[in-house]
Length: 136
Ligand code: HEM
Image 1 (cartoon, rainbow, N blue to C red):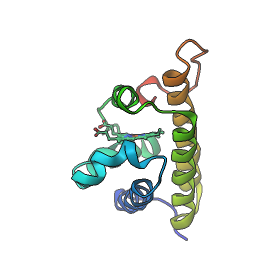
Image 2: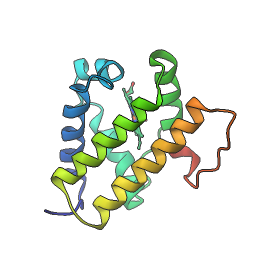
Image 3: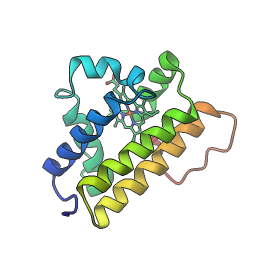
Image 4: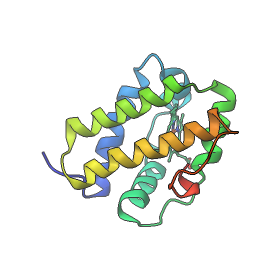
């Protein structure tokens, strides 16, 4: 299997991941609006994000933290949401790609998810994550 090496690879991965997230009983309510609107408009932002994380392009200029704080406010995320998100992301990668970048994409996602979960679900706990704050 190939490694992740281009933006087109990321798009394939993201479409695969969203297909699974939209069909997942735990994640579907949070992804519901996106599932209805469709991912086409959302994919460029997500590709920018992952290119920035994996290839340091610096093209992602949004605030992941603010977006998910708002989503948490309306959907009430739990540990189960984060566990399932990480599980689906890891298995989506495993099904399509193999290599150093693929492994990094799995690891980085788990660490960003952990930081995000701590911030949202345990705001009084220790916040040292080693992850740049704009990604969590
Ligand atoms: C509980 C788990 C998660 C759920 C249910 C979730 C759900 C969503 C949804 C519904 C959106 C679209 C929001 C909108 O455009 O209005 C979104 C955006 C996004 N998510 Fe997540 N997400 C989760 C975890 C993560 C994690 C762990 C990462 C990174 C590793 C991530 C990265 C992003 C990014 C980059 C965006 C785009 C932000 C922007 O518009 O600037 N998400 N997420």
